[in-house]
Length: 386
Image (cartoon, rainbow, N blue to C red):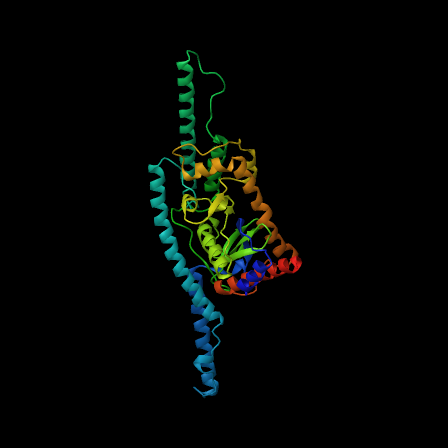
């Protein structure tokens, strides 16, 4: 249905893709934050249910005898029962545990590579290593400041004078100092000593495939809904993921956009795709696909950046080259379109139409529901155009 509606939009001339903006929004699921359980809690609940069932069966056998032949056949037993959902939650916990272990191994490898290259490491900090990471970031900042002082003193000595002006404090020194102070305060306020292991995974017994997500309004039990839209406000592609971090969705959304256009028979090539800083990573900057702008910081920070022109300096990293491009007049003008393209769509869906929570359960079901919501959004665009 989503593709059929996109075909209609294309016939109306509304599927132009010179500029495509991508973003995600957290959508609550048909589940409660209070329904999350650890493996030990789930196993205890399953054991309790089985014990209660055995007791009831034994009592009924005493009253009415054994198998009377009037029970439901196995194939008609309700598979959406709480017992089935508890089993599904246990299976999700097993997958989550394997994913956590893989993530921990990848983190160690990425951290070692970052240290060899003399840079910091982006991404979630494992529990118990916040102070260590903050100290390392501050040390790198101070090292940059020392190099800056040496360079200024060397230049002054070459000119036969003393270096003047305030002592350089390095790039964003105050930010790193504040981060370290917060990390130490958080560590001291913990009731339990910090652990180097990741926190124990939990699964939701209402919708085992939902996840705890951080939204601007706080924590929600739900999903990360993604959308890609053109300048007219027509949604070209959509998806739903269990991952709260948008950086993992950049390449899948590029692929989804191209696949959606192909399915709808739209021959136009995507000119450029716009992403906010949540999608920033070297892998996303270097990936195949259409040209793209990915913010290297918050919008207000980018607006205050000193303008520049021309190509980036030779030898610039992918992130440095993107930062340079965003400070050019062309890059800044293009990136300004992102907010005006994609964010009003989420505002309309959530505020005007009232879709803040999925009504179905399970990842496949909410994906279908999200595409239906996006399809009706496009229908409204086509109706207004007609």
